[in-house]
Length: 89
Length: 306
Image (cartoon, rainbow over all chains, first blue to last red):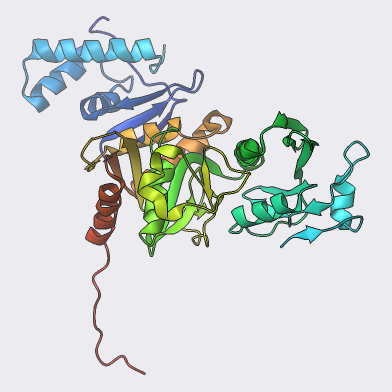
C-alpha cells in the first residue's frame, strides 16, 4: 500500500464495540472478525480523510513509537483489512 | 395426564389428522416448546405416560402443529416405528432408542418453529434468584452435566439445549425439556438416576420438577470438560464472548444484523467467563461463588415496618 492512500472503512458493515474491541460482520460473506484494542484504534481513524502517512505520524506520536515502525504497523493493518474486505475500494 | 381418546379427540386434533395417518388411541396433552405446539400419540399407553412425565415442565399448548407418532412396528420383535410430523424417525428401532430419537427430531422442529421469534443459542441455562447463567458450548462440552449439577445444587432449570432470547428485551423463555445425560456423567449425577424404563437406552432423560421463570442472562459461561483437569474459571473478553455465541447460535445468518446486535447487548449486560470443568462439584462451586460475589448485600431498614 502507498502511504498517500486514504483508507476508508466500508459503510455497510455491522459493527459492535465491546470494551474497546470490535466485532465486525461482513455484509456479503457474513464472516465475523474480532478486532483487538490496537486494531480498533486504527479502525476508528481509517475514515477516508487521512493518508496512511498521516495516520502513522499520529500513531507514532500517541504511542511513542518510531515513525518507521508506525508506518509498518499501519501499512500491515490496512493490508489485512483489505484482505478481509473490510475497507472501501 | 394420560388421555385415552379412542375416537373422541378434540376438534383441533381431528383437523390435524388426515386420512393417511389414522389417529392412535393414546395421546399426550398438547405441549408448548417455544414456538412449537406438539403432541405425541401411540398405541402404547405406558409410552404416553412416560412422555408426559418427561415433558411435565412444558406448558400447555393450544392445537398441535406437529404430532409425533410412536407405534409398535412388530409386536413379535418389539421393534417400534417413530414418526415426527412427516419425517420417519425410526422404522424398526429398539424401544430404548425411541425417546432419544424423539427428542432429536423434536429439537429440530422447535428450532424451525422458533428462529423467527427468538434468538436461539445452543446452550444450557439455569437460574438462582436474580442470577441467570447461560452455558454456551458445542455438544460434548458438559453443558447438560453442568446444568444438572446446578439443579442438584438448588438452581432452577431453564434448559439443557436451547436458550431462547427475545432480541428486544433479552428475556429468555425457558425450554425445560428433560435433561439428557450421557453415561460419562452418570457416576457424578447418580442421584438423578431415573427409574429404568424400556424406553431409555444409553442416555438418561431426567425431567425437571419445575421450570425457572423467564429472565435476562446475567452470566455467560463457555464450559469445556477436560478429564482430570482442575476446574477453573477465568474472564473472557466480551468481543470474544460474542464471537463464541455467534458460533453457538442456531440460524445466525437468518437475521445476522439483528442477531449480532442482540448478542452484543446480551454480553454487555452479563459477566462472561471460560469454565474448565474437571470435577463437576468444583465447577458448580465456582458458579455458586461467582453468583455470591455479586449478590446484593442484605440491608436492614429501620422504621419501615407497617
